[in-house]
Amino acid sequence: MAIDKFIKEYESLHQVTLVVDRRIEETEPPRSGELEDSIARTFLLKFSFLRNNQNCYFSVVIQIPYFRPNYTMEQKLLLHKKEIYMYEKVLPTMYESWTQEKLSPNYYAHESQSGILILENLYQEGLFKMSETSFSFPECKVVLKCLAQFHALSTVHLDKVLSVLDSLTVTDRAPIIGEAETNIVFEKFRKFSFPLIINEEMKKAIDKIFTNYRFLMNLAFLPNLNRLNVIIHGNVRWSNLYFQNDDEDNAVVKFKFVDFRNSRRGSPAIDLVHFLTTSAQFEVFIKHRNFLFE
Image (cartoon, rainbow, N blue to C red; front, top):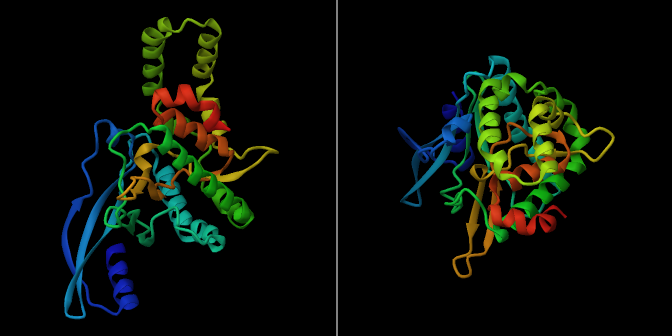
């Protein structure tokens, strides 16, 4: 089991004996609509140990797969293997040439059959998710700066990992997208939002996206042919971003990404567009999109 493996390695590394609280609790209840979008649930494993005659208390995150029914077992396994490969091979390789704070949580152990991961508890380290699901202009700049660093680091080591990374990427997204659910969303948009759009060219462009949605999704999971490729995060949205602010001026002093199941070789623009369209405040996107894209 991953938990037993973690306990053994932690005790050996730190020369302590752990007292483990087996009453595992969820890190935080899913927000409205978040569970439907999620493919993992996270729980806390708490433990303590004695050092210098004082009790020290600590905790780690247990990440347990939670997959929607439209995922096949093969796709679930590939997603799990992808994240394990990112934590065990890709991210450590990227950090070989990086002297600053890591952009991901520490990884401790995993269990292959169950898909369980044990990771650093970012809340315990003073990081947090934003209370709002859409970000302000300064927050967007922090995310995009760290994203640019992540992409730049990956280009140095891309050749070392790309063959395995490509083999773990599901490029046929049709079974995962959920065609029936997607069509309902598109029809609602056509019925209620299209009448509000005055520009006819914009209507045609949006309708073209809807018509070719499956093709475009598959295209987004293929390498960027004959152009710049980096290792993209693949799901840069508010729920996968953690911040730590300075107590005095509230400036962001630490930042981490989580959830690397959709990491893959591709255009950095995919991460950029995904973040700005899912997590930036609407006013920020309208007013500053040219600056942020540049």
